[in-house]
Length: 198
Image 1 (cartoon, rainbow, N blue to C red):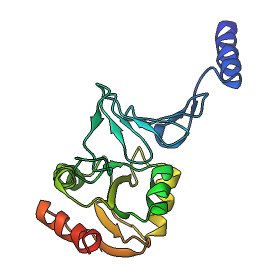
Image 2 (cartoon, helix red, strand yellow):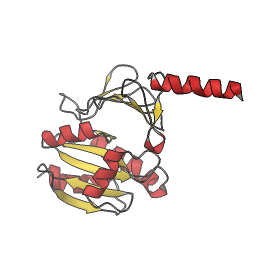
Image 3 (cartoon, rainbow, N blue to C red):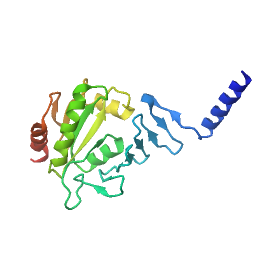
Image 4 (cartoon, rainbow, N blue to C red):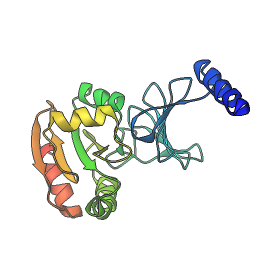
């Protein structure tokens, strides 16, 4: 019993000293420097930079750098790059996209949802081939083990009550399209094009 109390006291002391990360909601942990370690292994730095489990880095402006250190084709406005960035939601990246008057595609996704898992590669393919340099897209976790407070607030703001909801915001931040339908690649490009291509 005494040994158990000693170990518990040591862990408590380390946590208070900032040597052990503390638990947050949905299984995420916050490291001493403020970095959030999400349940899926993704790291979110305090400035909004995300590092995926495979080593890919996504900066708040949508710039993506692969594990090999080379820039990834994301359509971020760099010469010769095509595509619409499709990245996990962070408040910092979302705020930056709004400040830049981007057309924003929000995909409310749940990691337990079979429909979302079918829709995800379709969206990725569509965004990779899209040619709208004034648009960006975010995957927003909704009511799953990875949903954070910012994502909960975003769902409330737009009245999202169900996963696999697509929302397209125009350059002024107003809802131009909201749907729970399953979209194929052509539908994704057509719906985004009615807003971003106008």
